[in-house]
Image 1 (cartoon, rainbow, N blue to C red):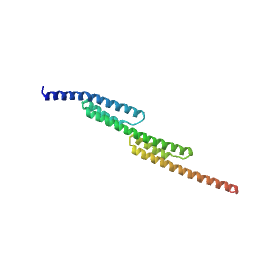
Image 2: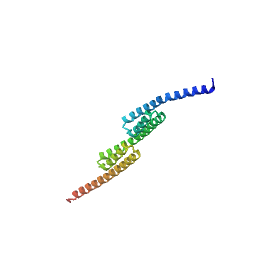
Image 3: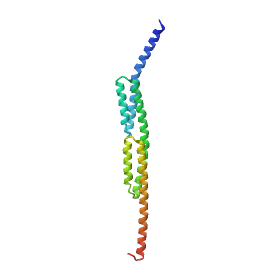
Image 4: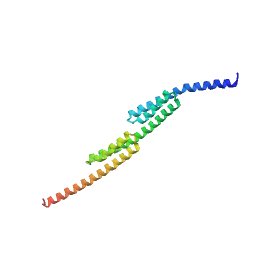
Length: 174
């Protein structure tokens, strides 16, 4: 009969609705993040840092701290999306460098030192240090280009020497 009683009923109803919806929202947030993690893992993305964040969210969820759990699940998904984008970008760089190195090898150049740099880049990539991975991949490409250039210069010198030897043979010089 009093207004405060109506307000109390509405407040109680609001709290009950809010409390009932939080577990559902939390479950949905974790389900979406888990599905995304599975997709990224199948694409080869290292998701261990994201998994740690998600595990922390599960702990909060078990202690009924739904708002923090939802926040951690959402942050984990955002971080995973960022890593997936970076993973794809750096992976394309690796493929480009690998293609170039194979081409240099096909021409006869020895590109072992460039391959070593590319392996270091792959390790940095696996550790999710994308900036370092990209820098090392660029160094591998530069090193490969330098090795190929040195090889071509050596081939030119050998060709010149062969021509000079043929010239001496024509003149009868042994």
